Length: 202
Image: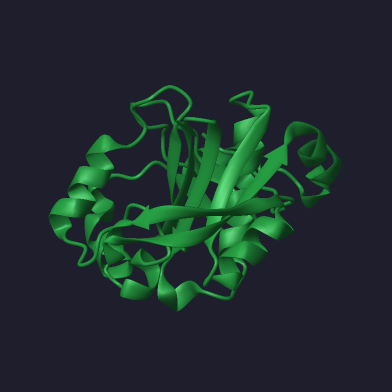
């Protein structure tokens, strides 16, 4: 984990947004709340069918209106924390946690040009730490399409345990598809924290 002086942290970190979402710095990434300035980048990345088909709710095609609605709607509910994943000042994906029936759910997507570099794992670990450490969750759920082994590996590297397969509606394909389901509880997370917690910088 990179360390910085207090002065550098104050200079580099934007102020917390009006919804109280913290800003985290991992080794390579910054996680912050989405803002209107992210709309073009979100459209460019999320409008790739290979991205949208691996999420539950991202439509295809993905328009500027969709991105604007996403930015306006996130981080409004208690227990919800949605972050843009930012690399060298540019958004490369999104991740977050939200309350759902059956427990809190972790979700994420990364733009196609950034696949295979460990960014999703790095971001998801920061979200997990926030969910257990700051939001007080006792357990987390997550899912990955059966046809997406890379996303499954992200969850396994973060300590999630496979619990079964379920059929879920995928908005981008307007149909249902099987998802591997995973769970991570607080006790297992505590034993895995050696990965190092993301630094809250604002």
